[in-house]
Length: 253
Image (tube, rainbow, N blue to C red):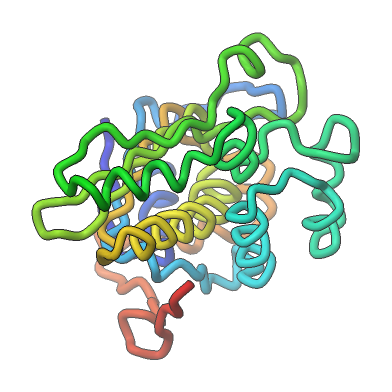
């Protein structure tokens, strides 16, 4: 198990790309060749609220990620809302109307109950509770399904740590480190984490994401100048981080 322990997503991306540059193994996938780590990877975010990715080379859209996070927290799965911001989102739906694996819908409606209030109530009642697992993978609906949209993130585990803050651990079956882990996931799940923490009445703690298959697509690595970001701190170069420099501050949900 490889562990990438970092302050925030801004620092995680170049570190992961640096390590992938000499550890990555080329393999085929249903969407084209990838370079993947030969073992699962856990990313540890010490300050998950610092969720905006500032790298111009990645060109992440923080406004879309914010609106998508709110769409998730609202428990929705409709294509129309998110397609207003990014039209190509329609291509990830099987029927053009809904997303089969929409995380927010899984959190709040898919299993015929809203999981979040139950988790929040349990942690309020017992801060030593270790049973609060938010489910996203449904064996009946997902196992063996051949479709465009299956949940990559499977579970989120919430526990109040020894320091009194709420930690969250997310398990993931297959994670694109450029578009998934250090793009969308770092925003969506840190907002989920913050929402649950604030609802419980504690501070947001550490966010860990455990990815069984951690990869980047070969065509993206070739086209985008992301390899330049792989000048990891191990080379003696400092990773530019507006948060660490005091230029940017996280804003609360």
